[in-house]
View 1 (cartoon, rainbow, N blue to C red):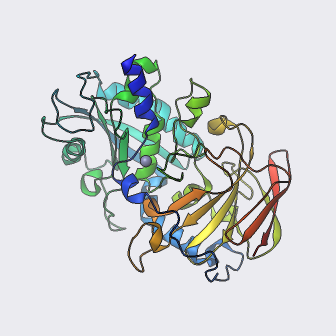
View 2 (cartoon, rainbow, N blue to C red):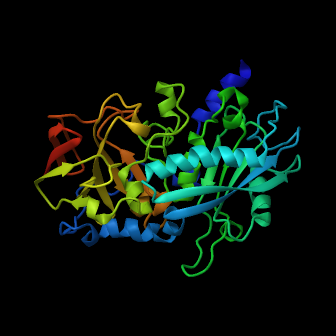
View 3 (cartoon, rainbow, N blue to C red):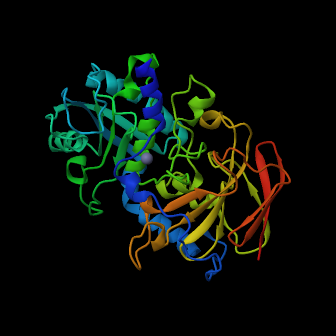
Length: 398
Ligand SMILES: [Zn+2]
């Protein structure tokens, strides 16, 4: 009983220790919505805030496009460990690295391959096992694995054999240090890693472990920030927020939800030809942001650092837990105040803020036909929908 309760809570608190903490942005201290708007010119490449997004993510596309070789490690945590992240109960899972890597290859590779239509394919390579001492921490697990990781491994997936305590994060992910563009960038140099506790691999889950948290942490290794407000886990429409949201609707689900258009753009999973930048009033067609072709995201400029994304989500596939299909608006903020990065440094990748703003938590109240939402200097009306496509009319508002 206790164990099951612990499982649910630890999984629900799908937090990232390093990237997440730093990426939690203030939501009320950005520049005012009346900031000067540069002329976007109607093309995706001509709008500075979008250029900032794409240029910032450019060094990480070496990982987010093509095959990403992730070395899998088991970390043995001794009974009596002092790191407070671990549950004081002495349970240890008998995790075998080859079996774990095979499970991840089957389920997590399939998730990302489907999510990205084959643009990103993580490959899970069984590398080995490490052990920490009672006075060492979960970070030591990862550092020790990095030291021993092979030169052709792009990132690490480290799974502890001990559960985390109920009041602790379920795991964390980090992009690591940036490597020079032309240089090799193995995990043992960059430190790029995803780490989770043992709970998601508990036998109580059945044949398929709960892989949504690991999918979330891998998202952090690609430079994705959280997208919910508050603690970052309030949104049910993005794997980078409440990754367990699908399972709250269907207990048999093991994957996270899909991810939002801005992450797809940054990672190179959506081409610029799928983006429309509105420079004023207009009516625009949209198909779901996970489609393979067509107009998949509408960008509404706020200023040189901030913009709105308007996208359609269909309640199918990884988003089958949504009560209905519809339109959602996110505010993307890369201004220095979004992450307290300092005077002139934009907040890039895991440090940018991206908040769903057209609904209320958990943001599954997507805009339907005839709905209007206004904010950040824009008014957005869903003017028609049907056959998997939408038409939205936008206008500048006071
Ligand atoms: Zn996280």
